[in-house]
Length: 321
Image (cartoon, rainbow, N blue to C red; front, side, top):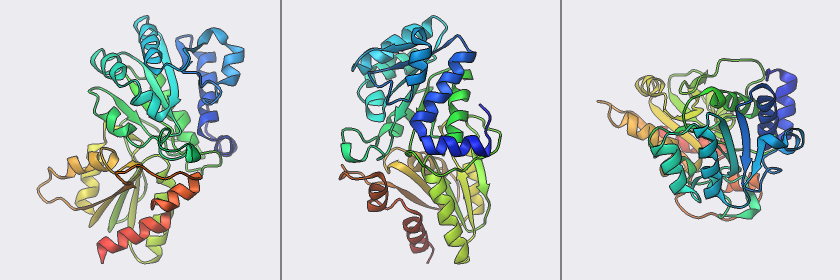
């Protein structure tokens, strides 16, 4: 699917789930190996059009996520490419053993998609928040973890995952109306971070929904005379270690920003890398706290837990001065 300013605006308006559904429809039309599966969440996955047009390429296993991964494993063993979607905590932790064995140990070509990761599920509360999904999925040997920054990059991630041989987890953050970062065609490679702006004082490494927020924070910091780099780390595993090392050498402060627990996510991955350096820079990890959260609208939750551009600026300045 071509990225144009018109498409980017439309996908943004529809939101990540609908964009995922449109991308899957396009893939199913072009590639007979692609199958879509869900645990009774086809509509929530944006798959309505695909379900109606290609009922033979969609499978609903019911509210049984363990079985969802098992059926996906069977399809993968037959040379097909299954994309299985459910809410983030269900597609990861609820079927942890099946993920560990079928996607990890057996290294089957299964693609899983976590809907509503982070706190975008709002009022549904902790049962539906995706707070620990990166931590779990990146602990699985051989797993690839993708966190698209906007709906255009979501299209790129899904298309890349379809061509990639091996297990992939795609983490969808944000909601309908999420900001646009990419509105023209660009190169997207799994495992290769994208530098969106360059500066010498602070390096902000962000993933998912926090990439746009980090760009806004960098603009505010620049207005205060603090030069910032902002990197879209769309692949949390395998981490682009070359980019991390380059930023660590060139910056006074490295900042990671993610809509995920501060335990085990992007911040932990970057910390693990730079801690091995001879002279590591200071590291500021910004994310959701290591606790169960309250509930509320998506924007309320981001503000309450310090994931706005203004909050990032305050935390960065507190570390520099």
